[in-house]
Image 1: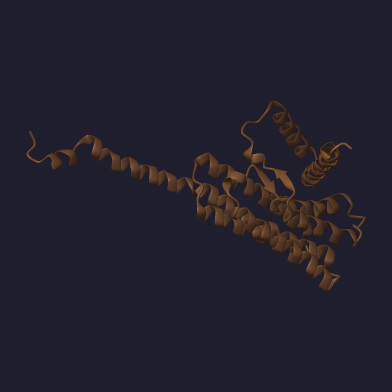
Image 2: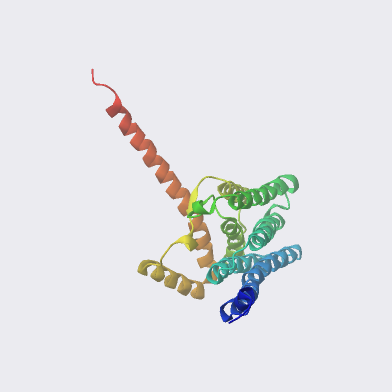
Length: 270
């Protein structure tokens, strides 16, 4: 029999094995966190490269780099949830990367490609997009996780996708026809205000289970991407923005209709 019970407990196999297990878990956790953070870093790197390409006049490549950054932005969130390594550091890094890749890069692309001839008004319009993107990110960061089932306002990657696909679509399909100058500021401003609006957009990554119809839609989308990437991405980006706007309009109209029908019923009969 051991003379000191404390020594017996200290040297017991159960107690002795807990520390190595905890160390292994910490080691695995630290190494798994590299994956989503690496994707976030690649997102930021693509945004920086897009700015460089825009400054060199390579607008088509700059637009594609913004879309590649979008892919890395999707991957970092997926990997963080799959590996259960979400952290405050990763969230802050993601926001900084998004501001560069989806705020500064597309604003600079649109200004240099379309609005440079209108020096002051073009600068203001492109700056509004960047500022609205920053406000959109800040609002999302302080939104409680319980309210993340839907996005309030157009997500900034989708807003950047609209400007990038517009440039890609024009350069690859209508290189002989330039988009009218008066349309570009309208598109940029509407996209900017959608990002800071109260319009609700579905959070695709929050859906609990993928249905058969959704799997079929994803399959058709992948086929369309393989056949014609620029056109497919153009319609996906613009369709997503219009979907939220249309759904919000229909929802508001139905609410007003219900109120209109309810008022006569509540009035007392003479």
